[in-house]
Image (tube, rainbow, N blue to C red; front, side):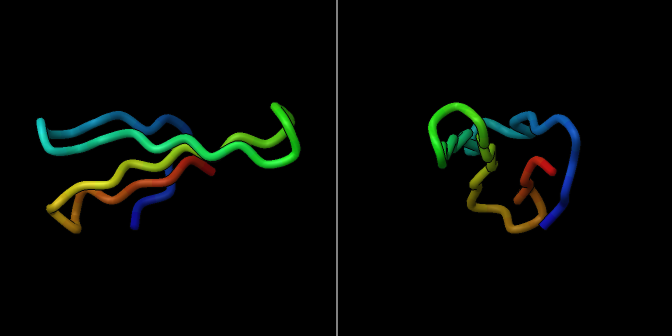
Length: 43
């Protein structure tokens, strides 16, 4: 999994998943894809 400041879809199968914890204070963005090389999370 890659940790990046800005996560963007790489291919057409990539989808963005947004998780909110504690309201809008903490937002976690992830990219989930069939290709394991495209896995990313913001951090």
